[in-house]
Image 1: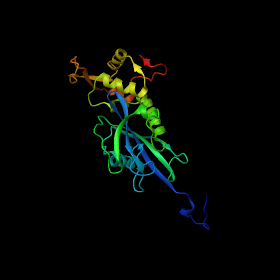
Image 2: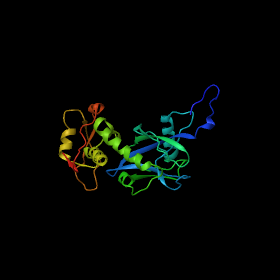
Image 3: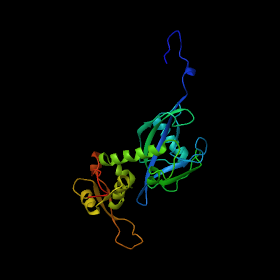
Image 4: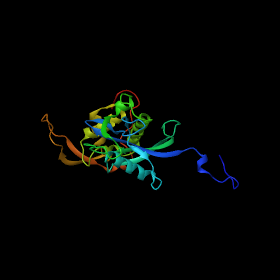
Amino acid sequence: MTHTADTPYDPGRYPAFAVTVDIAVFTMLDGELHVLLVRRAGEPFAGSWALPGGFKQPDETLDQAAHRELHEETAVDGAALLRQFGAYGDPGRDPRMNVVTVAYVAVVRDLVGVSAGSDAAEAALHPVHRVVSGTLPLAFDHRRIVADAVDRVGHDLETTGLATAFVGPTFTLTELRDVFEAVWQVRLDAANFRRKLSSDDGWVVPTGRRATPGADGGKPAELFKAGTAWKSGGPMRRPRTGRKAK
């Protein structure tokens, strides 16, 4: 639809349109990849689980909207990573009006004791496999967004230092290997993983300390910190076949 000097612009002649942001927040819990979801307090899809998010306000950027919505709905601050990865605008994805959402992926370490903010009835961590498989239904097209976010994280593990965002300033090699295995859904050979990461390429640096002893009474695992090599990419490529890789 066009307008000229004789037919001035009339916003009322155009269909209602809105922009939202939705955030897929990932964390590792008990060696498994989890996503943070909120239970919607209002319609549409009242009572359903969904990604935290909401409408972008006229006076804020997309990034500002993502940070605000994440805090308002989950009380989460200080994500180790928060970046755009896609946009979704299929007709009918939102029953209220024509809505395009800009999707973000976030990584938060040690995300425990989450609580719902002012815009959600409940907030909780859920295993990603339950969402992607459809065992746990989500509102809108959020299942697709979560699946796409996992794919993006899987790609970024190969090309960036994203894996280190899932662990603390110091970590065990098992904790780091868990990240790759959980996101890629593969089994990595523990000995080969240690050799690769402990090489002279600068992936990890020994701290000289050990983790807190476990309940089994075994020797505590050695603690490492991230080296400088992560600034140039990831230490390995995603296995393309099979469930176990070296």
